[in-house]
Length: 398
Image 1 (tube, rainbow, N blue to C red):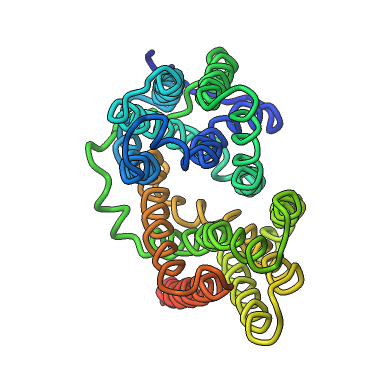
Image 2: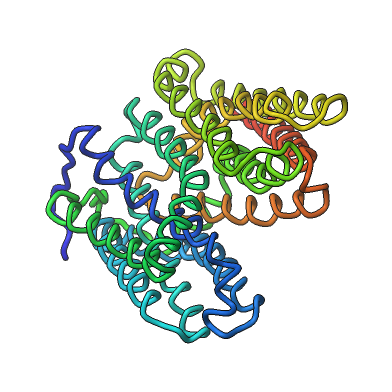
């Protein structure tokens, strides 16, 4: 699948979103739609709960680390072959997951599924970087991706439960496979190669990327924003259902309001970026995380868990998330257009590791039945990001 000599991308923004969004969503959906059947899987596969936990942990690890592999590959052979190959691997693994009853085969297929998901994520975001890096549409795309992904943890488990109840657990993986095949068939004739062909593809670009303070500052901001939602997702069921008495439907609706607010805020992304710039938008995003953390702490100290004390402060954080993720990719990757695939891979891999490790530690070490993990994560990560942004600005003005 050779790259064209003069790569072009004439697809309109709405059409580009139709092409890209399914791949971005599927990578997350494969985790969330599976959650309702996790308790039953030890009995189904005749194995231990620890082995089933591997199917969750290894998926997340491979999803993040796999991007470091596929980033350089996409810089060398192109975005399109990595996307198509990853999507077919994801689809094949999903269908085979529905066909096996062997525990270790199931674990191995989950790893293959994650590898495919990591490939399509790299190809998708590298394409966005290739085409839209110097255009205002990039903020809209990044913001919309984040907002759509906000719905996946809210609606994915419900969809998984409905599918499993009516069609059986195997239908969950057949659904994932079918969606991946449909997305691939849609992309096959329309997703044109966008990798810059400058004849000087470096074999290894990690060092210049990792030595860039701007890359680290904005990647830290991205990790702060996405980790805030991860910790919210991890604690919200226990806070709202176990302590505040929300029903499953009531919890899902309350949870979805934060995602809806993110989508609404995204519509104004071009305006606030044009007014504040990349650095200004990221700084204001971190300020919103700190404000939301303060409101959560006040609610935790002086009131019982409720929509007002837990979800409303999350609305403030949700706005900060959009302010941040709409600009951090351009801030982190702006200097690496010739190796965008590698830069994107490191950007998402580092974010995945920070969120997965640090976010989990906050949930474990602080009481996951309270707002404190979210307060702690937002406070610490926003403060670190603001310090990094201040130092970056100082270096740039010297």
